[in-house]
Image (cartoon, rainbow, N blue to C red):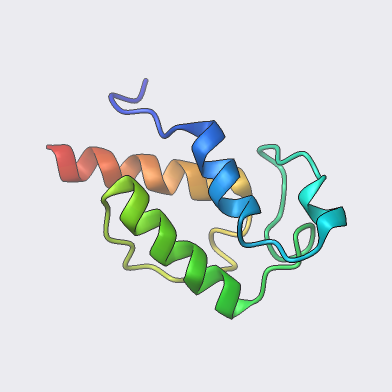
Length: 88
């Protein structure tokens, strides 16, 4: 079990703040949601998202591989791991 849990609601809220389309904002973000395909993120939106995540969760994201962290569950897990390693 994780020592530190990323606030799921906050993470989803941050992701939705980077979505332009009102229709896409209505999509429920689940563990299987894909940033590229489902939410139509591009590399610029992803970088903007990374900056917001770093500031909000007080972490440094070194890996900007949008394909690797395309799925919501992958991104959430990565943030948890970063936060835990920072707190150790």
